[in-house]
Amino acid sequence: MSVLRNIRWPYAVIAVIAVAVASVGLLRPQLAAVVTGGPGATAVIGQNPPPTLFTDAEITPLGKQVAAQRGKADALFAGWTATHGTTRDDTAFAAWAAQQIPAPPSATARTAELHQVQALAKTRTAAGKKAATWLELYGKSDIWKLYQHDQRELVPAAKGTDEKARLKSALSLAKTVSDQLAARDKQPAPFVLDPSLRPDKQITPGAKGPYSYPSRHAARSAAAVTLLSAFAPHRTEDYRWMQDEVVYSRVYMAGHVQSDILAGTLLGDLIGDYELAAKGN
Image (cartoon, rainbow, N blue to C red):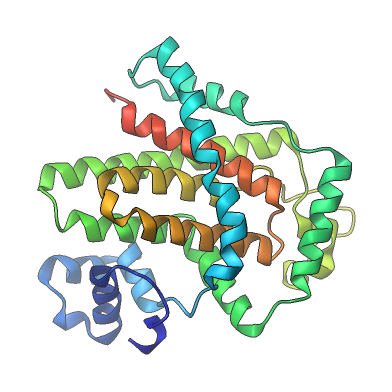
């Protein structure tokens, strides 16, 4: 439990992780099946619990800008429902959502953002790198699946099954649309523009990708937080805190610049709204 003391996980999530690390045999039967049956979120995080993450002082400035995308998304989504209602149509929605994401910033603006990432890179610490690595690994989906699994233990089975399906759909849609936009806009990641930011990536000279606008981590995190906050409003602060941790880590380790994060967040918020409203298969 010592590695978790500075992490604001809900108690039930901490318990799942701690017990998974200590002994599979002590788990309740349904959780033991998850841990022993394959690489589920509970298993993978149980095998590698979170280190001490970033402080509130570090993540809050970007977090405030991330939070501001929520109102923009809600206003935009009202336009979707006014035209399409709430009938599920993933293909049409994905095309519409892609159109709502602003074009990448100008070359001058993106260069200024790159300079900010370069300055942040100079402040990296061993602990910060460890935190960012963990968040990069698990921030795309496993963290959010673990939160949902934890919450599912406390609600009727049918409700839990529906929420699990909606989260899975949202994470998948966020990946699909963010990848399509990245391929369309072709904005090289900061570590591509300046390979010294991530020597571990071994970028080939002259390479243009990987592309980073919008951030897939940000899109998936925002979609997950929108859904999870609707499912369990009393835990919204925890979900948003983890979202801020994830997106900050992506800038910290030069995977993204700020505009990548904000565009991804707007996309994810839209997708979360859609998953909450959509009816039908």
